[in-house]
Image 1: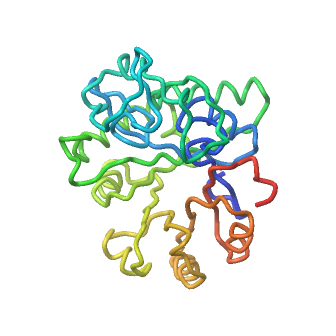
Image 2: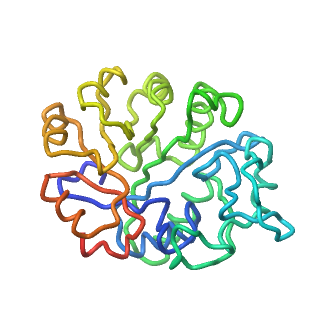
Length: 275
C-alpha cells in the first residue's frame, strides 16, 4: 500500500484535530475516516518499552498526573517512568489548546505494540482496510542518554517490536521516519530492507539534504511550506517519493496534489474526501 501510485493521505498522530494525539482512540478514528496510513511518534520508557508519544516527556499543555492535577512543567521525563507508570497519566481529558474542537477524553500513551494490535483488531471488527504505519522516531543528538537512548539501542528496541508484531515480514506495511540522520543511518545498517523517510524542516535543496543523509531513502518528507515543484521533480527523478507534513488546508492540499505529490499528512483526516 505504501507504494501505491495514487496520491495518499496519512492521519497525523492519528486524528489529532479530532481526538487526543498518538492514542488508540485517535488512530481508530483516522482509520474510520479512510486514511491510507497512520503517522505516529515513538520514544522509550524506563523499562525499555517503545512508547507512542511526540515528546520524551509529559506535555504540560495536555497531560495530567495520576492524581488528576495538571502537569505544569516539561520535567516529567518518560525515560524515568516505567510503562505502567506512564499509563497512569491522562493525556486527553484536558484537551489540546492548539485544537479547541478536539474531543476531550481521558486516554493514555500506549506502547507501539499495543497500538498496532488494537488498530488491527479494530479494522477486523469493522471490516476496514488496515492502514500502513509511518513510525517517526523522536530523537536528536542532544537528547542521547538524557531523553532517549543513543541510536544503536533505540533501533534495537524498535526492531524487536517490529519483529514481534510481524511487520518485518511485510515491508509494505510500515516505514520508519526521523529528522535524526543518525537514527536513519543506524536503521539502514541494522535493517537494510526497511523503508525509510528523511524528515526535514529546512530550506536546503533536495540534493544537499541527500548528501547530508548519505543515501537515497524511499521517502523524502519536507515541511509543506518549504516544498516546491522542483523539489518533487528532483526527488522523483532519483526514485524517491515525496510525502509532506502537516497540511490542514483543503486548498493547499489540492495544490500540492496537482504538483504530483505522493502523499500528505494531516491533523484532520475527516476532510479526506476534500483532499
